[in-house]
Length: 270
Image 1 (cartoon, rainbow, N blue to C red):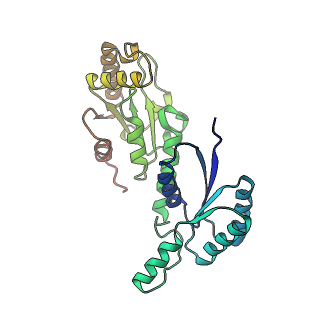
Image 2: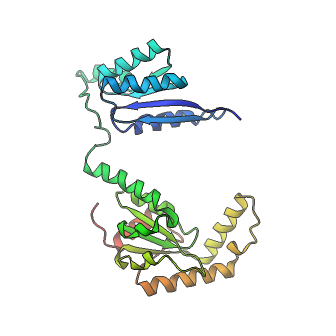
Image 3: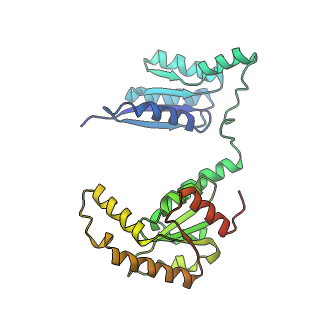
């Protein structure tokens, strides 16, 4: 097995720009896996010294996006002194833009992502949603802005992530035939719960395709059409009994489903 190598990403903001660019470049190289280590809010010389000491131990490639020219120069010089390979993603572009525009850059970290309350709210929402995917940590359902319920393969996870990127803390819970949903789900305010429904034929096709992709026999109970019909009927009964908003996802794109949820649940914060 090929051993992975490390890339250290230094940024005086979130580091998302550096990580996205490096991941895009790495997608062209599959021979040797890389471990990306992101260091955000690097804004002092001591931080750079400490991080580069760690990079030296594993002979990592150092990539940085530091808008402060002094810190960027320090990172470059220290890497050179330590014999570490490095790449400055931002300074050459800033210099070229300064020449073109006729004035120096502001050198203010965080301008790209707008490091304000809304930005951090979105980050918190994504973290919450990932932790509460597919019935995880269901004891915290009361903390969610939105709770999605639905049978397997009814788009719960992708819709949850889409909503999270718009700032909503979302939890999703699978509805399994013959198994009672967690009691905490039934205690959530109905106005915050959406039940996702899908046409049986569409669900049958999706489940069969999933089993084939996993190298398994598609003729199983999981993809049985009659069982799927009963699953969906049972889900509808539950949704109506609990007075949850019902959303049919059969022919909708993820963003369409998300927008319908926001509209029908009367969510208007964003």
